[in-house]
Length: 387
Image (cartoon, helix red, strand yellow):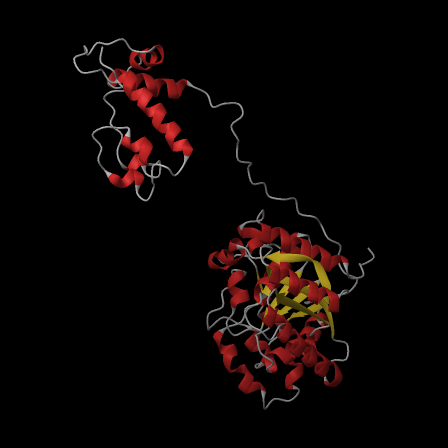
């Protein structure tokens, strides 16, 4: 019977890094790959390996003149008795795999379950919040649409007013906002009522949106010559409430990242300012400038305006900087900063490409759960309506 071990020739690559003693014990393999840069005296363990290999080779390799059918050790007889190849062996192995059951201890990935939505109480009076930060890319629009969607899923009526000419909030809510669609431009410049331009979000019942179109890009110039140009949006909201068409629990106004007439209109129309802050150093500089502008609006245009909420976004727990920025903001504004922080999340970034918020795109993701917690915290901070 032929010795199966004898027919196996180890490849040079398989012995890389083992050392010269082990490699040199195998005759007929002159390749230096297995022992580059290693000397025979590098390790006593290599000497032990060499001794073991010499014993194996001397036991399994027939001496000169010895018959090929030399006795095989007991351990090798078990290896030689098992069939190594052939169609019968392959068919039997496949059948055994099909019939076999997975081990009881095999880990099973848990199924992702949509979390239960908590019903939130309505505020005592309508809350109008401007979501603003003069620094771009801090998550203003993302915060606006996701908190609004979370509140609507909790049983409240919510309106999002998109005053950013880019129309990103409209996109995230699945609202059509091409050039011919009635939009916030018609309200600010043409004097249309909010009821004429409101659209309902197709994915979230109770969530409504006033879209922004590209026409809004020229509204800054057109508003300059108008009377009461800073109060156009405020008067539109008041008129909708007087006509019984503004029965929303929350109104969120998404602002562009600049202090122009569109942002000033949003500040004058609101009672509260919600400030998303990215957990990076530059965000602190933008926050100080924003607070100065809010104070200026309070002094000259809207005495009832107040910064009520600060939300830390794009939090990366792996970096010390995120923790330092969050601690710094909490130290200076302990009553304004929400306990919830929104982490960096791929799902949050992917959702707008599907014309959805993360609340409907992936409700069980970390981003959706964080925004749901932030919405709950925001809702419970306000006086509740007595039913």
